[in-house]
Length: 101
Image 1 (cartoon, rainbow, N blue to C red):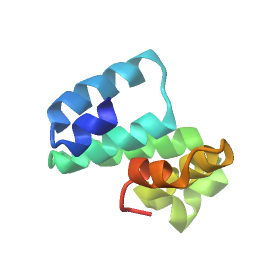
Image 2: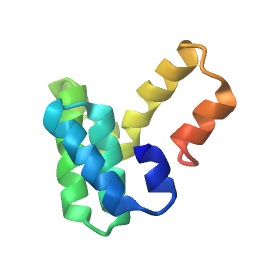
Image 3: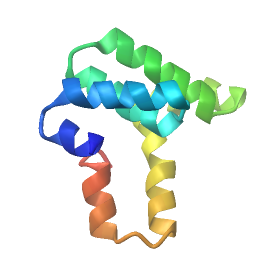
Image 4: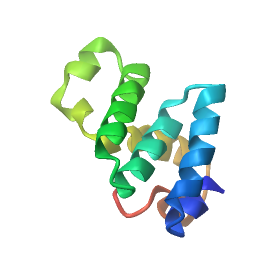
């Protein structure tokens, strides 16, 4: 539902749901999506802070120090791999991941 709200341009609603989800349990993928929504809302400093928290949760200290870890979309790769390895249809995975791959 949040993904659909985001893609329909209803970022304010998507942000509310994503924040509620993160309040219940922190998840790097949810945080990455929240960062994207915040970025679209021109809340770039908040987005960067959320992405930093997501990187801290998802990566080891050595991985965090890597130049690649500074890019927010790096968190998408593990999710896409998981979906494909779970036998999700590739066209559906591509739609869900969006055009950033």
